[in-house]
Image (tube, rainbow, N blue to C red; front, side, top):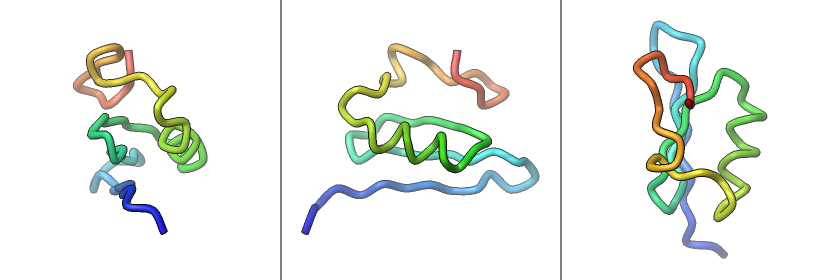
Amino acid sequence: MSDQVFRIEWLPGTDRLSGRCHCGAPHTAQDPVAMWEWLLAHPDHPTSEEHPTTEEGRVS
């Protein structure tokens, strides 16, 4: 059993999902499949420092 915890939350009032990897990197996406692919790509997904999230929730 793994101690890794992945969190995905729906952003109320939007069609966006907010996710946080067990390493603490945040990400937002509209597509649930894209969100899971990003989370499961750890450690190869970009961190928030490499691709900061904009106010609209899109990754730059």
